[in-house]
Image 1 (cartoon, one colour):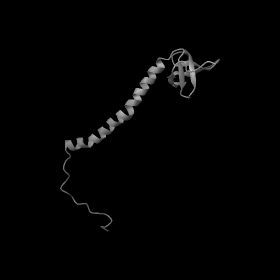
Image 2: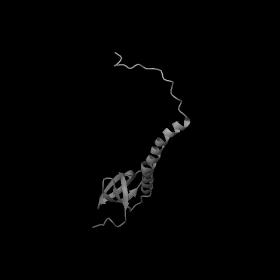
Image 3: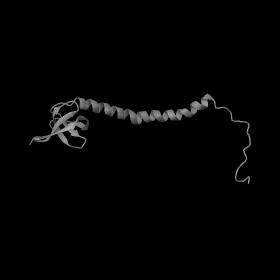
Image 4: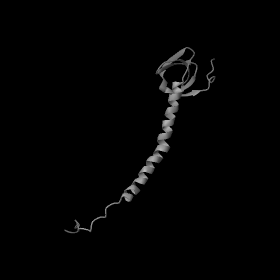
Length: 111
């Protein structure tokens, strides 16, 4: 029955891991976190900051694109809600956070 379970024989003992070996194993992990920060987290934080500044600077008369792809003109601005005009006489209230971007004034033509 020895071929199913191997006998465990005592060895001289493992050498204790030194501090340099432990740090050497941590270097790849630290490098992965640094790369992750610079390639993913940092650009995302920068975009969120720019979007927050853009939304905070919305004013009456600005022309915007919503997250849904609608082009609209800002009619009024309050704390968290803006009123936009989609077409002549069609006004809609929406959250400021739903603004995707500003477009140059004069893009929307009144017909």
